[in-house]
Amino acid sequence: MMMADVYPWHQATWQLLLQSRTRQAVPHAMIISGLSGIGKTHFTQALSAWLLCPQPTERGACGQCKSCQLWQAESHPDYRFLQAQTDEKTGKTSRVIKVDQVRDVVSFLNKSAQLNGYRVVVIQPADILNTNAANSLLKTLEEPGAKTAIILLTDQPLALLPTIRSRCQHFVLSVPSVLQAQAWLAPQLKQPDQAALLLRLSENAPLAALALQDAPWFGLRQELAQQLVAVAQHKQSALQASQQWLKNLKAEELLLVLQLLLADTLFVALGQDNAIKNTDLLPIISILANQLSVTRLIELHRDCVESQRLVSANIQAGLLLDGFWQALT
Ligand SMILES: [Zn+2]
Image 1 (cartoon, rainbow, N blue to C red):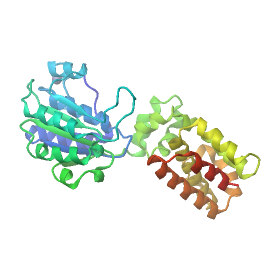
Image 2: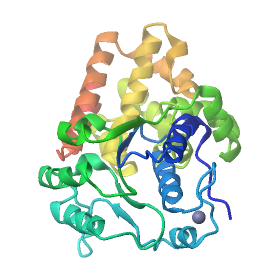
Image 3: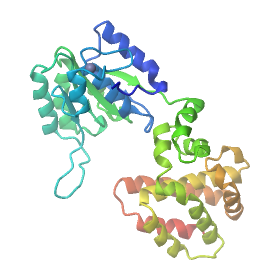
Image 4: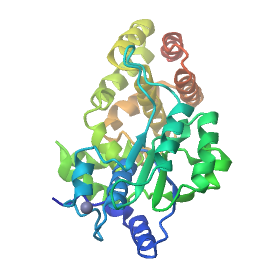
């Protein structure tokens, strides 16, 4: 069985790494970054399997050898994957990667490889290494040993310590062109004609767009927009709407859709209809744009962005959203 190829929009970076192995100059420490939802995980897995495989092809790992079989069985002895730990009792996932986890990886790298390929460590996402963990990784990043690759995966490379960044070679994975993204996405959708809409709502990140077709908020956008109109027209109580929507969607998702809808409403209010993302909702968004002043729309949008920040910092969403819905009236 062949391993899956990397996505077409990542071929340029793939070729760079291919050449580095031919020259026996694979970077021993790499940062792989790029927008969320473009396939960084897929790329890193293909890269890891290819490095571990002692007889790789130009497309990736051979898929046949002992190393590839162990990789496919998720039991390769020369590979370590580091992520935030989940507490078995509470089910809560830690917000950080801790120093003990890094120490385990360091001692793993102090032993020699069991098979004939590389040793590979992937840290995902690397931006949640806490300061102690990051510091205990520094020496290893400088001298990880022969045929070793440490791969730090992140959406936010600037959140890494400068001392970490300076020790790694940095690869920024590309976002596809609109045509590339549509060609990849459309055949995989339940409704292929939604490809353009899903991509607009996902910053043109194809994997994010693919996941979005099943996200509850995607299907609820129209109902939410209609409810905004009903509250703005005093046909429905703001507090009732607020409570109902907190049951329908998670606060983060609700605030994201509200922010997207308000941004579009603002565009329409300013006469820039063709800039909107929710193109399928233009009629209802136009009604909302007539209902609210530009000043009010700017305030509401700003409140939404601020609430997103507060909720991501663990502030309770209920009161924020009650205030938001009341400001519509
Ligand atoms: Zn192989």
